[in-house]
Image (cartoon, rainbow, N blue to C red):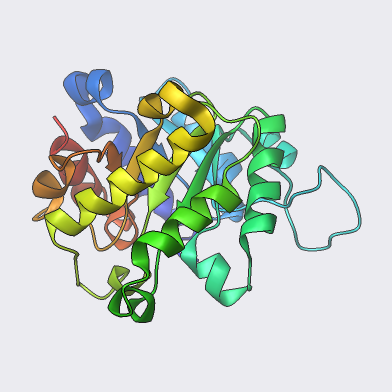
Length: 238
């Protein structure tokens, strides 16, 4: 819940700063608030940056005042949508069944579903992190699912906005668990699904995180508000 019309200057800087090498080798996506989505999508036409939504309703239309459907996002120019973000799960009490319904709505609207999973600090300290996240994956992944319509984003809730970051070993263990859990349903196709890491990703730690096993990209929060930080993180993937 950040940004106003003047924020388009940061998007323009991202587009101009992406460069040919970055555009050719890294998929770039910005998910602005719904108020900015249509203008951002228009600005990004023909650029290396795609635009997505931050959330969607599970229904295509209806009496759901204040909500936005996946079809509406697609109509506004979105190519993807985030569902099940930890702040939606926490602030709005969204459970796995609802997240899965939203992801399936995204797939029906021909949007890439970015499904977020992650554990709280209490769950990690209790030794439950792997089991909690595996259960979220099983309960939240849409049907049908494949690498063309699904991305998983692992966000340790306790690391978001705190500056705390799991060890690389912890990240690799969790991403391997997510991959194995996906394989239960998808078989060999799970290897092609991108798994992103999201939790206090910054320019100074991005390269290390992105080199970790089974980490295929990053879900960036606060650092995405500034073009210079966002582009520095993206270049760390080269």
